[in-house]
Image (cartoon, rainbow, N blue to C red):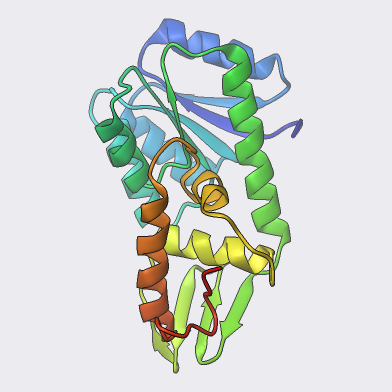
Length: 220
């Protein structure tokens, strides 16, 4: 357990907010609370928590909008979205907004805690591993989330940064599509493995890797 980790819980319904608070405090997490989207956004920017548990349906600003704005502002702490909606479309919106994982209500206490532990482990690996990657004339700085090719800036999405970071953490090893889905998208049942392939194609173009005979991002 990551003792003392600061978890921001965002939930507009007081009974559920209280349950989440008690559950996390019983595991020695330090809990921050917010009751609407605007409060959540302000508190997240100010407090910079280790992890955020974010409800979707809230007044003033919904969870998807909060998540998207935090990623736009380069807030990189993991975000676990909670929602009563279990539709695939909602998962797509959440993950594309920058969420790391997705949990549908009602859920068990043990599953919630397990997912938070996994997100905190992932964040710890990110912070302690290498922060730069150089591939020929392409260079990415993970701590600053910037990329350059031939000295010119290259725009990468959050998912593309995460894919490169996962590969950098395991140089020379084969990383399966399922591992990409689990580590980058955080929800192993969705999206499909073709999503990984599309992102790799996009990355090859941005890196300048030959799609026919790639030197850096090879498919085995």
